[in-house]
Length: 105
Image (tube, rainbow, N blue to C red; front, side, top):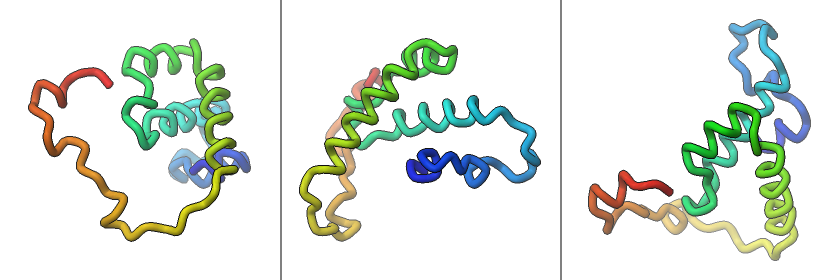
């Protein structure tokens, strides 16, 4: 998704039934918000109130630019050998109580 967004190939991500009946800038913003919300660490993900503000047009550009800088640094770090699927899947909810699960990130 990151690559398609970078290459501006949004048509590959949008439902073909829309038949190009969408606003590209809005799709790009939605994808940016989705990528911010699916970061690896829950602490790096925006809170729901931040997501609402970003969707209303407040703060997305700044947050996206900040995330892009972090991504550049990560891409320049030494690549580690790929892990087997079972090695990188971590159940972060394993030891949490229901109250902890429903709290903000």
